[in-house]
Amino acid sequence: MDVLLIEDDPDVAELVKDALTDLEHKVEHVTTARDGLFVAASSNFDVIILDRMLPGGVDGIRIIETLRQQNNKTPVLVLSGLGEVEDKVHGLRAGGNDYLVKPFAISELLARIEAVTRQRRSTPPETQLKVGDLELDLLSRVVRREGRVMILQPRELKLLEYLMRNAGQVLTRPMLLEAIWAYHFDPQTNLIEVHISRLRQKIDQPFKTPMLHTIRNVGYILRADCQSEKIAAA
Image (tube, rainbow, N blue to C red; front, side, top):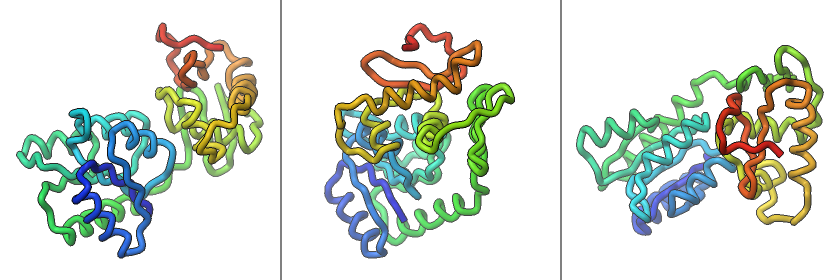
């Protein structure tokens, strides 16, 4: 099982990592909200274990809200010293799957992880992505817009799927390089620009309303509504 642990307390982090690795689970550990969001959006995990109070006064609940807005459905188990009923309700309503108050028994943590991941396995797999009138069938790999079928190359399909899964979110160059090409560094080429241009020619140019936009000096965003003044298509 692949686990993302977002926890800044070294003692808690070591305890959780040791328990999970002893069970032969793979654990990726980060300590800040920024790194947590980046890693969660760039890789697939079976569960995210998330501390609420992170460096800089960031509430981990904001991470959950952002992930759910991105249609990221990875189960999230919240760890927190905030144990009032309203704290738990806030965490669950934000999209958390479970809420465990510190201090906790490691056996209970493992049982709760098993429970939230079992719930996910029982959910039917997603077979179609849809953003506005753009559709991607994940089984047949067929792309349609306004009912018109478009032929995409394998890398273009992978790029489109990533954009659609993160619709409405600005995706930076490092995020795209890591997610689509598995590059953990910037090769300083126009690789991304070439593929974005090809994808835009297929999903945007034949249609009245563009969906794939460039945010200058930041990255790219796919969205059905292009009314925002922040969007400037390149």
